Image (cartoon, rainbow, N blue to C red; front, side):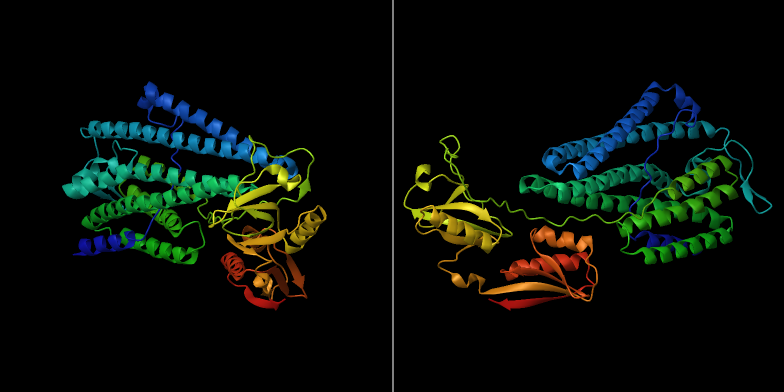
Length: 518
């Protein structure tokens, strides 16, 4: 009955979502099993892994060097950003190759250990006996991996032993999945940096799409890790508990239950404070599981297994799992173009007037030069550029000049065009993809909005970046000691989008919208 209850305890604990990570570290020559030192394939894999690590370190250094140049040479932003993206893709490829190598190295090691286990059967551990309450196994040949010692084969029911062996096999699977998860995490960080650095939508769009695709892939990996690790934790914990309960070592069982209770308290404190709750759960419970295995190995007199587990604990302790969450706020780019005049044609048959670009987010003003029943020759527009066109629902050709961020800029361009002989240049504004001809709809700007952020003396860079991501040219000014004002904006939808971005960056700020009559 005690065994049944304890198995239920392990099962309840293990249903918590878990992600595991121990960057798989293939052993270096001199530390791996002696017989594997003569295995040419194994040594070749170790050397290949070492070369890949050197290559990765070199590329990472190059990326950091380019980031420094990006900050000091803004005029080279486009070229440097493209090179950074190319190198980041290369880093991801190298890390993926390393993960595949580590999987093969782990498989060879596991095959060797299992072969050694079979050989140890004829010499293996003797029957249990008590030794001052500390050891229940007599001295004799032991296997370095705790699970592969003959003792568990002899003292566990066959199905439970099979589950224990499967759990041990899945440890390497968990680590391999974790390698991919963290490689993805590092790539997400790189993509986020690159996304903030680019200046055009052509550069930003593929970065944004790749970021979200990779983030979704990492979520799938996290689910796979959780499933595999829960199986490992549940079956290992039960196997050790079964043996200890069988021989009456309840103090060690109680000690582990205390460890797990402390682990749950740590998890509660870290909830929503790291890259993922699953990651924190894995590291904390993994440490508790390793401490438990060390105690079991000590009790059973398996010194080599204990020493190996102590080294594993040191590796786990050295890993910083409190990584910050990485998010990417979508940026919206509007390409503004001042009005100019040229005596030489800017548009030809090979380079015709382009179609006007419609932006889904943001505001842009253009000057409508005329509406025609058919396509018109470039010469009609007196050397003005840039030009663009749109064909409306009535199949008429609408020709536009320039692209301006503010109404004041558009009005200045309109006046200049009148001076150059254009009869009726009209200002058209696009707000979130919707066009409004201000000559026909003068009330579009009848109402404007500004955002007021209150009760704060400082506006963080994070908040300013969130605002700029929605409205890059939005004016931010401080009013008095404790209020910042953002805007004006003519579109309530844009205003609400900015407020939403600010609240996502900091939901403790007090924000309101003020309507401004024109």
